[in-house]
Length: 371
Image 1 (cartoon, one colour):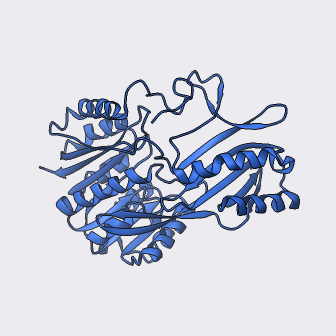
Image 2 (cartoon, rainbow, N blue to C red):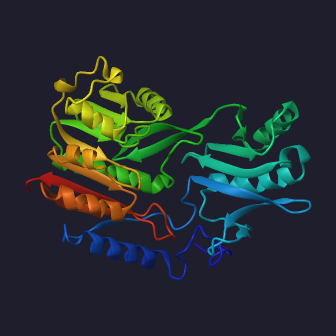
Image 3 (cartoon, rainbow, N blue to C red):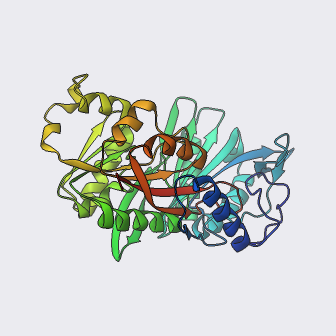
């Protein structure tokens, strides 16, 4: 990928070497971090080297007459006005500049606009959220409907305590994993994996790991909208998954329907609460009708936030025979492995390059009890 803003835009801080050299550098760094626990080879799952992001957020900078897309400068003190952004997928790129041109020709759409967010699927469906510092009235709706038609995309307007949905508030993602297609509704301002191509590879790796090492019934903590849960459910008789976000649970249930999946029980609670429930320390109304004792839970997948596992959840996870750990922060992963490797052994590891041209790494490890 070549970009006119390399060296200025804070989104891409690795740009001095070609993409594959950067990938090898990350692989070496991850190998070093995992070396106290794992000495075998690490599989690196590469990204496309351009047009790889299905999600993007931009500030809007206003000068005397026009507005521009802006990203924070590498020095974190200034903003860079963008002329291009080749990391976003084609569906976003084909719309973002036409959108900006249209907005600059329409005072109603331009006035008070301070940000634009894009969400796209691998099939090209695109959702555009326009963020304002003013209340949106009927005139805005009329102009935005014209813009929506021009761009063949769904448009949402947001301001303080106001959300205007013109048609729909999600895109339907289609992923092919291990030779089968899966469908997901990704809602506006909900968490989604930013790199659809790498996400397919990451889920595929998790499925192969579960197929090789999994046993008993399956549990997933931090399940989100079912990104991993739904494909992995095809490998197990019974599945229980936890997620704290009510909206994510709603999307997960919709995604089960889209994929014809009926063996997953989604529970809205934090991993800490679920730990207390399994240990019998607390009774939860949200678990009414759920027979926890009817599960033979021996395989777990965790995909925690950057902070990693809290102490109680780490203790819970250590009780499973097989642990598949997906991490967006290898530093917290290493901290958690110091505890988990007292009872488990790392038998496989992988690097998923969700964020090319940045130092960020997504990692996966498989642990087996007593191996």
